[in-house]
Structures are given as structure tokens and as C-alpha cells.
Amino acid sequence: MKHIEEKRLIKKCIRKDRLAQRVLYEQYKTAMFSTAYRITNDWDLANDVLQNGFIKVFENLHQYKGNGALGGWIKTIVVRAALKEIKGLQMYVEVDDKIAGDIYFDDNLTGELLAKIMATLPDKCRVVFNLIEVEGYKQKEVSVMLNIQLGTVKSQLHYAKKLLKRKLNQRGYERGNER
Amino acid sequence: MKEEMKDEQLERAIKDLPSSSPRDSTWDAIEDHLEGEGPNIRKQKWYPFVAAMIVVLMVSGLMLYVRSTKLDMDIQFSEEISLEAEYPVIGFLVDDAFDELLDNECDELSALCEADDFQQLVVQLAELRTEASEMMLLINQAGYDEYLMKAKSRIENENAKVKREIMTLLRG
Image (cartoon, rainbow over all chains, first blue to last red; front, top):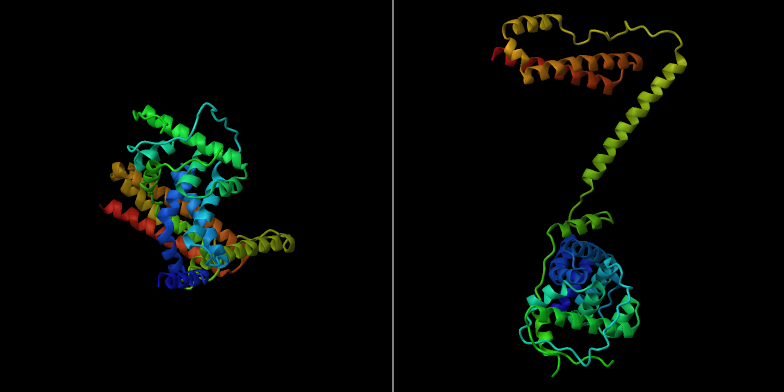
């Protein structure tokens, strides 16, 4: 039923039914804005991204074929719009080779704390971490989206987790990264 | 480097990430952009735009007309234009009786006449008289023109309104 309703809504949006477009926007705005904000780390910029993203959504909705969830399709557009706003994504970041093994976090890590710490990460590794760990894209997909080598994606992700861990430790959370 | 193992605590924290809401005006901006693309099934918002275009065209047309008429004048008439045409130019709106009344009243009510709001009205009256003289010159050059005649009426009405306000102040 939900699928049929969604199809009907999409058809109305394609026909430029403003009310239908508003309904679609309201349905996805919070999730998409949160994504945009986590990537850009700037509230005003995230609003611009959301605006530009949804304009593109409505302009290209006729191209959505229904293979894959509509939310995922919209998110891809919003993510791309957000990535365009991040300058310096081509920066090279060295990874500390002394780090051995995986990095794990303790059970005191809350969503709110994670959000705060993520906001302090450098742009590139924050974006990579967001796209992979939060938004669920595969490393290979992120490599294509950012036009960087897969190895760089892995390095950036590792670096992001290392920084997160370090910042958490500085806040008083003590647990080694060994298991 | 092999893909890192999933961290349960991290996954839990990620699921718990706070969400944020955009500003209310973001939809308005989206809608404004979409409005420019084509017909809207729900509502027509083109009225203000069309009205604005009509006004712009009218004003542009008038300016062109006035300018071209003036140019024609420069070309067609080589003799001096008589200022004693249909409409008197100098002295239009000048009201000697009113001015005399004002002088007399202000001799007695000097404090009132020196007040800022009174002075503003007097200045306004003088400006209207100047504007009126210029308008008359234009009308005499242009000949009868409906728009200019309406402008002349506007000045006359404004002049009468300012005089009434002055009198209201003087009468207390």
C-alpha cells in the first residue's frame, strides 16, 4: 500500500503538483538535512545543500525508475550536493603507521557525544567516516564519489576513527583499542 | 589493510546520532525556484510578476515618449517657445492670500511656526510649487498629455493637503 501511495506521490510531483512536492519534502527533509549537516558541518551551508538537493530531486524525479528506495535515491543527490560544498577534499593526509589493528570504542559512546566529536574532525576524514559508517556507503562507492583511490578511503576512515578515539580519550574515556 | 571489523558500540552510537531540522524558509526558497519553471497546478503566482512588467513597460514607454517629443521639439521648433501658453508656468500654485495669512499667523504664533513639523510643511509647500512650475513647463512643451495632466492633478491635491495640515496646526 505504501509503495502504491509513494508511486502516486511521485507521479504528482513529476506533474509539478506543489502540494505533493511539499509532502515529499516534509517526508525526507529531516533525514536529508541531518546528512547534509554531518557532511558540511555548517548549518547555513546544510540548508543551502538541502535546497539545491531538493531542487535537483524535483527536476530529475522523472528519471527515478523505482529500482532502489526513493529515500536512497534522494540521499545520493543530497550527498553529492553536500560534497560539492566541501573544499579541499583532495588534501593528502598521512596516516600514523604505528597504529596497529582495528580501533574500537567503549560503551560510553553516545550518539550525542559522537556527533560532537565528529564535528571537530578535519573535513576529509569526517566526510569519509560519515559516508561509510553513518550513511552506509561502501568504501568502493565512496572512492568513486570522492574521486580518490580506494586505499585513500581506507586510510581516511582509519584516521577518522583514530582521531575520534583520541578525542574521546581526551574527554576522559579510558579504554585501549585492543580486544 | 583489510576492511575493519564492525564495532558494536560505534554502530549503536551511530544509530543514536541526533537529527537536525532545516530552517522553515528552505522550502520557500525551493518553491520560489520551482515557480519559475512552469505552470503550477495548485496556484498561479504570476500575477505580481506580470503586473510589475506592465508597470515597467508603461514607465519605459512614457519616458521614451517624453524624450522623443522633446527631441521632436528641438528639431521642429526653432523659435522661442512662448511661456504664455495654455497653462501658466511661473506662479502656478502660488497663493498670495495664503502666504499673507501665514505671515500674519506666524507673527503671533512664532513658537509654533518655528517648530520642526511646521517648518517641514512649509518646505513641502515650497517644493510642491517648484515641482508644479516644472510640470507646467513640461506640459507646455509636450502639449496635452493624459499622464502629465494626472501628475499635475496629483501635485494640486498634494498642495491642498499640505495647506490643510498647516491650517490645522495654526488653528490648534
